[in-house]
Every structure is written in C-alpha cells, then in structure tokens.
Image (cartoon, rainbow, N blue to C red; front, side, top):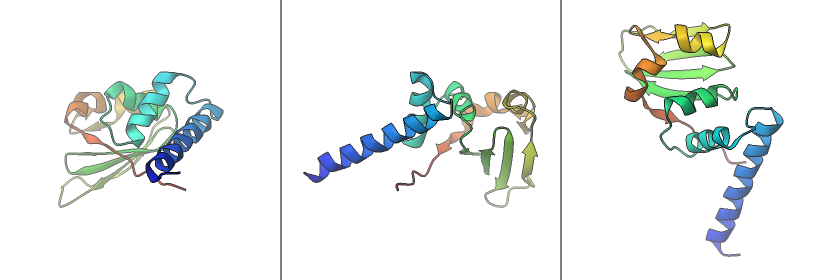
Length: 129
C-alpha cells in the first residue's frame, strides 16, 4: 500500500471511529453535528452555531480571546487562563446548563456570541492512537 493511500485509510478510520463514538453518546445524530466536530478537530474555522453544537456534544473545546485561553470542559464549566501579563485573573466557572453558560458567561461585558467574530479560532490537538 502506498503511503498516501495508507494515510487516507487511517484518517478515514479515525473519522469513522470518532463519528461512531459521538453517535453512541447520543451527541451526533445528524450530519450537521458531525460536520461541526470534523471542522473543529481538523483546525478549520467554525461558526458560533457550530461552536454551540460542539458544546452540546459534551466535548472539551478551547479558543483564544483577548489574551486569554478559554476552555470549556464538562457540560457547562468554563476555565479561563491568562496567556501573558493580562490583568484578567482567570478562574473556573460552573453553570447549571449550557444555555445558562451561553447567556451568562461574559468577558469584558460581552457574551460569547457578542465577541465570537473576534475569537482566534478554536484550537484542537488531534491525538492519534
């Protein structure tokens, strides 16, 4: 098998495995959710709607904004870490639901939807097994 063919087969197997994993958790029952996850895991820019779709899968998602690393873990927990000498202290915040997180979590008085167009696109480090 030529290397490029083997690489494509391996990538296809990884994508198929990822899709099956999401479906088994009830997170990815439609093509839209899989496309959002695929774009994120391959480093493509995602829309705010796709960001919300990924949050609803329960997966972790990270992005940079205004000198901060913003990490979404668990269903509705946000951790913020200053990247450099940013005056923002950071911390971890828990919300009762993803909807509450989207409505109530703010940086500099803005919700995620308000500042999404200025986010450095989400980052994902694909771990290959």
